[in-house]
Length: 197
Image 1 (cartoon, one colour):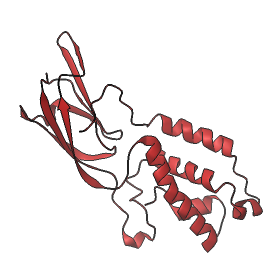
Image 2 (spheres, one colour):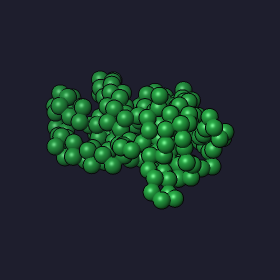
Image 3 (tube, one colour):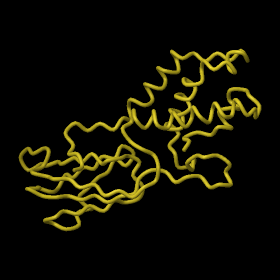
């Protein structure tokens, strides 16, 4: 699935609807999805997930303050997750979510030898067949993520003969720096978070 429009990128590069260029951009955008997902440590396809965590005690305790972080198995959480404790029942109200990064935080519960289950939907819906591209619903994909996919695609196609012969020069050093600075702030990283079983 694609995180950016083939037609839009082709037009931005100044090409007509030539099949070899369209195919090259499509293949590079497809590869970019996997590469960007790997960098961010997530996937993008829509799915329903149940993550289970063992919580011996809160991740952080100081005086009366507690905090427990959970790194979900994927980011881009859609809707409202349902959180269940084996000892306390449904405790969704105690949680705050960074839905983009897939990090859940509980600032209220004093866990002790507990199993916590978080059920959620994540990822993006595919675009309808009438859209003509094998992409996600791009209106739902954050603009920074579309930009990251575009930059990674440009890096992948920068040396293609079709571009160089047409006199199109993409500065890979600049593109690589743009990509890194854009993506690095969105990497799913929570060093004190619990991981799913």
